[in-house]
Image 1 (cartoon, rainbow, N blue to C red):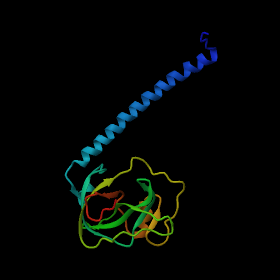
Image 2 (image 1 turned 120 degrees about the vertical axis):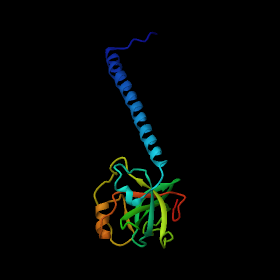
Image 3 (image 1 turned 135 degrees about the horizontal axis):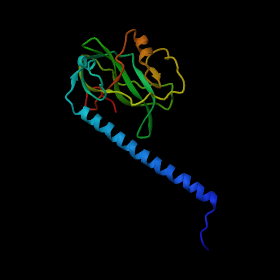
Image 4 (image 1 turned 90 degrees about the vertical axis):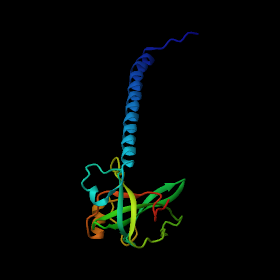
Amino acid sequence: MRFKPGRKLTLFCAVLLPLLIALGMWQLGRAEQKAAILERIDARRQRPPVDFGQVARIAEPGYMPVVLQGEYLNGRDVLLDNRTYRGRFGYEWVQPFRDQSGALVLVSRGWIAGSLDRAVLPSPEPAAGNLRLLVEVYVPLGKPFSLAASPLPAGWPKRVQNIDFEALGEAYQEPLYPYVLRLLPSQPTALT
């Protein structure tokens, strides 16, 4: 029995084959773009740390190592909801930090496990005193996904899906630095 493709199958293959080749080429281009982004991030992480006061003068601060000197404002924390680690549910714990420059910044201390009872919120050890921390500036590659804008919940800690710097600035009654600073794992007060 010989294979005899009809006109419909031949036309379908003639249209589909170039489309699949174009999609493959697009994927290869995206892979090159992502590799270039990762290379830039690694190069920035290798730079010597700068004091937080100098970061405002840097045009693209993403993933720069930064030294913070100051103290956490305990009791006014933010929990980023729906974060998982090794298959476990939890939160990303974000705390306000007053730098010696006077600026108020948000520091992500890391992941903390959540309770199966969603009404029970975790509470890590509060960090007291004047601290010197090494952090990196986290700049998301795109706008975070959100189903709908929602107002900040009352009370502290505030459980939210994404950081809204303007709304949190109003809650803290002062402007915030517009990026989250991620605490490096080797630093004091770092969580998972």
